[in-house]
Length: 264
Image (tube, rainbow, N blue to C red; front, side, top):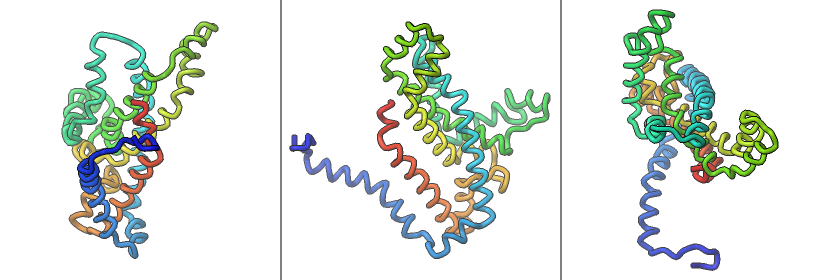
């Protein structure tokens, strides 16, 4: 161990680590080199980009709110109760983390489409068609981002010192009061991390969105979908939009640092 407590590692480890960093860093450098800096402002101010940005912000914020409303209670249940099939439930909730987004979009289409298992009756009763709509974009984003909210909050709850909750209960606090006044304030940093990570994932969603909601300018075309279209029509615009998404993602990760990982 060195004076600072760091372990001495074989040189080959550093070389392999540098190679791993290069795999991620080189494409980012290529994006920066290819960026048309002189025309960046004009490209980002175009109607297509502005509409896509507006829709991306709207849908990602809505998806984050929905994920919080259903994900935080789900995380509490998974962290604090033991019931048959809990591992299966957790696996299902976290499935979008490893599931190809296009497959998730197809699953949404089969379930919530005009002739889907659930979407069919909804359309017949209310006339509401979810696919190829802005609401469909929100649903797709919620589907892929929900695991980030659940995983972050559940991990924090599992690591929480429960003696404080026990003390509050012994003083006569109701379960709802304990949750509201003790538990949630103690995991507030993880709640914030969950909100930010969920929002960032929803903002960058592509595969499930294009499969379930389509790619309709002004209606379902988010920033990632705009990049996809621009790659065939205007490479400079694609690079400019990509740079915005990379910048947002990097800011999110750097600002959170290791807070998320400590919660797991």
